Image (cartoon, rainbow, N blue to C red; front, side, top):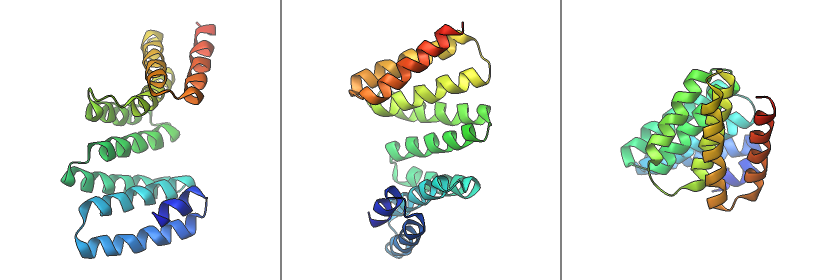
Length: 170
Protein backbone atom coordinates (compact mmCIF):
# COMPACT_ATOMS: atom_id res chain seq x y z
CA UNK A 1 0.00 0.00 0.00
CA UNK A 2 2.89 2.35 0.63
CA UNK A 3 4.09 1.81 -2.94
CA UNK A 4 0.66 2.79 -4.26
CA UNK A 5 0.54 5.86 -2.03
CA UNK A 6 3.89 7.09 -3.29
CA UNK A 7 2.98 6.21 -6.87
CA UNK A 8 -0.20 8.30 -6.73
CA UNK A 9 1.61 11.18 -5.04
CA UNK A 10 4.15 11.10 -7.89
CA UNK A 11 7.11 9.98 -5.78
CA UNK A 12 7.95 7.33 -8.35
CA UNK A 13 11.48 6.40 -7.20
CA UNK A 14 10.20 5.69 -3.69
CA UNK A 15 7.19 3.82 -5.09
CA UNK A 16 9.46 1.59 -7.17
CA UNK A 17 11.69 0.90 -4.16
CA UNK A 18 8.69 0.00 -2.00
CA UNK A 19 7.15 -2.24 -4.66
CA UNK A 20 10.47 -4.06 -5.02
CA UNK A 21 10.73 -4.44 -1.25
CA UNK A 22 7.17 -5.79 -1.08
CA UNK A 23 7.99 -8.12 -3.97
CA UNK A 24 10.84 -9.69 -1.99
CA UNK A 25 8.50 -10.28 0.96
CA UNK A 26 5.72 -11.68 -1.25
CA UNK A 27 8.18 -14.06 -2.94
CA UNK A 28 9.46 -15.26 0.42
CA UNK A 29 5.84 -15.90 1.49
CA UNK A 30 5.03 -17.43 -1.93
CA UNK A 31 2.02 -15.08 -2.13
CA UNK A 32 1.25 -15.10 -5.85
CA UNK A 33 -1.55 -12.53 -5.63
CA UNK A 34 0.76 -10.06 -3.90
CA UNK A 35 3.54 -10.74 -6.38
CA UNK A 36 1.11 -9.93 -9.19
CA UNK A 37 0.02 -6.77 -7.42
CA UNK A 38 3.65 -5.67 -7.01
CA UNK A 39 4.30 -6.22 -10.71
CA UNK A 40 1.14 -4.28 -11.56
CA UNK A 41 2.22 -1.41 -9.29
CA UNK A 42 5.66 -1.38 -10.88
CA UNK A 43 4.00 -1.27 -14.29
CA UNK A 44 1.97 1.78 -13.27
CA UNK A 45 5.03 3.51 -11.82
CA UNK A 46 7.20 2.90 -14.87
CA UNK A 47 4.40 3.92 -17.24
CA UNK A 48 4.03 7.18 -15.33
CA UNK A 49 7.68 8.08 -16.04
CA UNK A 50 7.36 6.92 -19.69
CA UNK A 51 9.50 3.81 -19.27
CA UNK A 52 7.05 2.04 -21.54
CA UNK A 53 9.05 -1.09 -22.33
CA UNK A 54 9.71 -1.75 -18.63
CA UNK A 55 6.06 -1.03 -17.81
CA UNK A 56 4.85 -3.54 -20.41
CA UNK A 57 7.18 -6.20 -18.99
CA UNK A 58 5.86 -5.55 -15.47
CA UNK A 59 2.22 -5.79 -16.60
CA UNK A 60 2.98 -8.98 -18.52
CA UNK A 61 4.55 -10.49 -15.40
CA UNK A 62 1.48 -9.44 -13.40
CA UNK A 63 -0.71 -11.30 -15.91
CA UNK A 64 1.16 -14.55 -15.20
CA UNK A 65 0.52 -14.32 -11.47
CA UNK A 66 -3.07 -13.11 -11.74
CA UNK A 67 -3.83 -16.08 -14.02
CA UNK A 68 -2.41 -18.47 -11.43
CA UNK A 69 -4.66 -17.13 -8.68
CA UNK A 70 -7.70 -16.48 -10.88
CA UNK A 71 -8.00 -12.74 -10.20
CA UNK A 72 -10.28 -11.78 -13.08
CA UNK A 73 -10.43 -8.05 -12.25
CA UNK A 74 -6.65 -7.74 -12.02
CA UNK A 75 -6.27 -9.75 -15.24
CA UNK A 76 -8.66 -7.37 -17.01
CA UNK A 77 -6.85 -4.32 -15.60
CA UNK A 78 -3.50 -5.72 -16.72
CA UNK A 79 -4.72 -6.32 -20.26
CA UNK A 80 -6.30 -2.88 -20.21
CA UNK A 81 -2.96 -1.33 -19.18
CA UNK A 82 -1.03 -3.22 -21.85
CA UNK A 83 -3.61 -2.05 -24.39
CA UNK A 84 -3.09 1.55 -23.25
CA UNK A 85 0.65 1.19 -23.73
CA UNK A 86 0.18 -0.27 -27.22
CA UNK A 87 -2.24 2.54 -28.07
CA UNK A 88 0.21 5.15 -26.81
CA UNK A 89 2.91 3.65 -29.03
CA UNK A 90 0.62 3.66 -32.08
CA UNK A 91 0.28 -0.14 -32.19
CA UNK A 92 -3.48 0.01 -32.58
CA UNK A 93 -4.01 -3.60 -33.66
CA UNK A 94 -2.34 -5.03 -30.55
CA UNK A 95 -4.08 -2.42 -28.41
CA UNK A 96 -7.40 -3.59 -29.83
CA UNK A 97 -6.58 -7.21 -29.02
CA UNK A 98 -5.63 -6.38 -25.43
CA UNK A 99 -8.78 -4.32 -24.85
CA UNK A 100 -10.94 -7.06 -26.36
CA UNK A 101 -9.21 -9.58 -24.09
CA UNK A 102 -10.06 -7.38 -21.09
CA UNK A 103 -13.69 -7.21 -22.28
CA UNK A 104 -13.81 -11.01 -22.63
CA UNK A 105 -12.52 -11.42 -19.07
CA UNK A 106 -15.06 -8.95 -17.67
CA UNK A 107 -17.76 -10.81 -19.56
CA UNK A 108 -21.29 -10.11 -18.41
CA UNK A 109 -20.30 -8.77 -14.99
CA UNK A 110 -21.80 -5.40 -14.04
CA UNK A 111 -18.45 -3.65 -13.91
CA UNK A 112 -19.62 -0.44 -15.53
CA UNK A 113 -16.53 1.62 -14.70
CA UNK A 114 -14.18 -0.93 -16.28
CA UNK A 115 -16.48 -1.46 -19.23
CA UNK A 116 -16.84 2.28 -19.81
CA UNK A 117 -13.06 2.70 -19.88
CA UNK A 118 -12.64 -0.28 -22.20
CA UNK A 119 -15.26 0.90 -24.69
CA UNK A 120 -13.79 4.42 -24.62
CA UNK A 121 -10.40 3.05 -25.61
CA UNK A 122 -11.94 0.74 -28.20
CA UNK A 123 -13.72 3.69 -29.83
CA UNK A 124 -10.46 5.65 -30.00
CA UNK A 125 -8.66 2.64 -31.45
CA UNK A 126 -11.38 2.10 -34.07
CA UNK A 127 -10.99 5.72 -35.16
CA UNK A 128 -7.23 5.35 -35.45
CA UNK A 129 -7.29 2.15 -37.49
CA UNK A 130 -9.93 3.71 -39.72
CA UNK A 131 -12.51 1.00 -39.28
CA UNK A 132 -16.06 1.84 -40.30
CA UNK A 133 -17.33 4.83 -38.33
CA UNK A 134 -20.32 2.82 -37.13
CA UNK A 135 -18.01 0.63 -35.01
CA UNK A 136 -16.48 3.63 -33.24
CA UNK A 137 -19.89 5.21 -32.69
CA UNK A 138 -21.28 1.95 -31.28
CA UNK A 139 -18.30 1.69 -28.92
CA UNK A 140 -18.82 5.28 -27.72
CA UNK A 141 -22.51 4.60 -27.14
CA UNK A 142 -21.62 1.56 -25.01
CA UNK A 143 -18.99 3.61 -23.21
CA UNK A 144 -21.52 6.34 -22.40
CA UNK A 145 -24.10 3.78 -21.27
CA UNK A 146 -21.64 2.18 -18.85
CA UNK A 147 -20.43 5.49 -17.44
CA UNK A 148 -24.08 6.50 -16.89
CA UNK A 149 -24.68 3.26 -15.00
CA UNK A 150 -21.49 3.80 -13.00
CA UNK A 151 -22.53 7.36 -12.14
CA UNK A 152 -19.19 8.67 -13.40
CA UNK A 153 -20.19 12.14 -14.59
CA UNK A 154 -16.60 13.21 -15.31
CA UNK A 155 -15.94 10.46 -17.86
CA UNK A 156 -19.52 10.66 -19.08
CA UNK A 157 -19.01 14.33 -20.05
CA UNK A 158 -15.69 13.58 -21.75
CA UNK A 159 -17.23 10.82 -23.82
CA UNK A 160 -20.30 12.82 -24.79
CA UNK A 161 -17.79 15.36 -26.06
CA UNK A 162 -15.83 12.66 -27.92
CA UNK A 163 -19.00 11.31 -29.50
CA UNK A 164 -20.18 14.80 -30.47
CA UNK A 165 -16.81 15.62 -32.00
CA UNK A 166 -16.90 12.40 -34.03
CA UNK A 167 -20.44 13.12 -35.22
CA UNK A 168 -19.43 16.61 -36.36
CA UNK A 169 -16.82 15.10 -38.68
CA UNK A 170 -19.12 12.59 -40.36
